[in-house]
Image: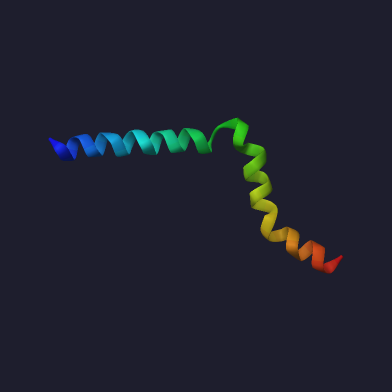
Length: 46
C-alpha cells in the first residue's frame, strides 16, 4: 500500500517537472542557459 502511494506521488512530481520544463514560458531562459558555455569562448576571442 505504501509503495503504491509513493509511486503515485513520484509519478505526479515527474509529470509536473516535465510540464514545467516543456512550458513555452521557459523557452527563453533555457535557450540562454544552453548558450552560456559558448559565450565565454566568444568573449575571450573578441
